[in-house]
Image (cartoon, rainbow, N blue to C red; front, top):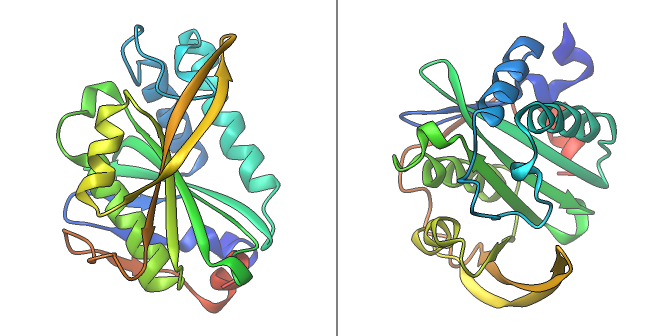
Length: 213
């Protein structure tokens, strides 16, 4: 079985409405199709790497290549997990979780996107809450970080709901102009637990080892 060699395939994080897991290849195509249909209005630029503004076919290809690249480059010292969120068996978005030297630092960073057709239903909050439960309760993280443009109100609202605190700013260049992002941090001490029930299965010793946990 594939889980004998790649135990991440057996990892499941579930909430009342969602199942977060790695997709099968056909399901990954559905995720790419979801991205191609749009993840934000064309007038917005919520990501420092503006892949959401690419033409639909290129946007879909980006999703495929990012998934394969992250799986192919995975090591216990540096990893990035793209968990696809499924609602009623269909993908609605992606919640990622990234770690560097997690065995020592015990810190994760995260990002996410939800297809436009599924926005406004609280799914983004539920996705991140599930990811935080995996990080804090299951993998033993001591902090979680996130970065959002100051005008990315939906992302900042999710962070506030889940207890993140301001942690300074970063300055980058986008389209030849300086843009500022707000850094946010949630410590294990300030994490209040998930606002919805979360269950994790498939986190075997072999799977933990891939995270450096």
